[in-house]
Length: 240
Image (cartoon, rainbow, N blue to C red; front, top):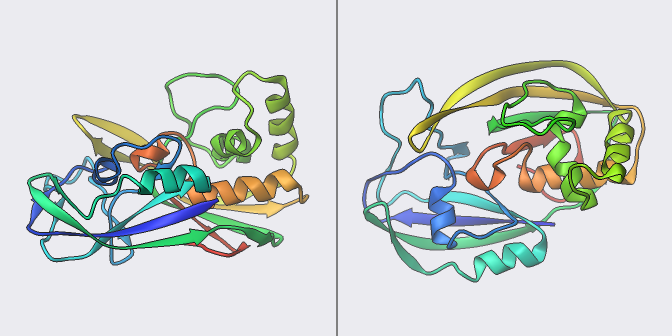
């Protein structure tokens, strides 16, 4: 799996929405990849519901966003990237593109998950629109388990993997909160915080799930900028 970090520069000041709409528009709305919000000086730009000011980019500053997924899907998305595009009332120039291969080489006895953009966690057991706020591993990494195995919700084999995966990690004391994010014309509540886990057993599926979480984030709507995470304490070829 790979992550492409795309550096862009707006020609003039502009008001932008939260989410990955800048990246999605520049890449012509690709599928089967995650797309982060814009990032500036290491911080993702998020429009919280409690903040009344607009989300603004400054002309001449260099911002970046990340596209993650399988190598074929990411490169298919990059093909659509133009040198200069008009978006949100300003021209955006592509400054650079860096591609990182992600491979987890080893797992320690403990690791952490810092949630960098609000995550929309769903239940692995019941399909419903309501989101879940928990550090239970089978919930937090449910979408990554689907990515790693290729199984669909409702498959018997998926249920077996979820049950086995839940036995691999022990949830340690964690910091869990929530944040209201202005997404389009509505407020979306996502989970934030710092999650901690102890590893009770190492399994190939755990390696694949962690690689997927590093590359694509956690939860649903990862193509819309939600669920970007930093995995701490894991040895990998690339980490945020």
